[in-house]
Image (tube, rainbow over all chains, first blue to last red; front, side):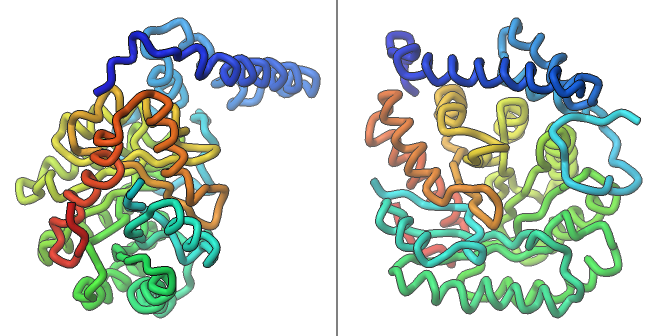
Length: 88
Length: 269
């Protein structure tokens, strides 16, 4: 595989990541303005932000949003996956 | 740049998409059976869908000189009703004999329920009975981690399952390692919203691409998806200084090596 040590990764990706970070900030402002910060998806989102301080950040964020149980459920839950685990 | 689109739901796409695929370098497209966006009301509805996959869609693709292959199964999202799912499974064997059908897929899990697991196990059995390749769908979003582990466990519990003939699709950063380390093939799906972007796919290829058991696909369907996501990933690979030889291995040779395990797949490396 490629040795990426000397490649201009910041040249390739900094502006895109900067734009996405501002989008995230604006998203959080929007949710706060609309007083929806207690939604389970937003709570999971805020919790997942802590993963940005970890070593394998993408994997950690995905794990943070995941169901970590190991036994098949009795029935399939209705509706599509929402992206965050809802604990009843 | 030649490439294979190993997972695309072309029944949901237009002829413009076929033309774009061919113009971008696509040499073959493979179409797994999947959920239509709504639950089907009868076994006959599946029968008609399988005919569409094996009779009509290859002809539509042929108008653009693009070989079209398919996989047959009942998808996990419609597997919750065990009686209905088993009736559908009974009509599958005759379609496995069709000249462009490569195997059983995309089976797998959706919400990781007991009934989904039962139908998954029965369709693995079907594939083994008919010596077929197996293509597995892993669940979406928050259900993917658990579903991928359940699928790996189910497959590993059956000593007759040959990991060389099984591809577990839609891996992401939190599932790719367990699939590769278990000896199975892994598919990375490029989606504009959920699943994986080209930069993230290339990140995973930098870490795991030497395994030779990886492919990328668009899984384009009736939802927000991009049939040209694979050519876009090729551009991303070039930006990251992958050689043309390495790119060819990843987007053409790897899928051909997996798919040629079916004698019906006619392209060569």
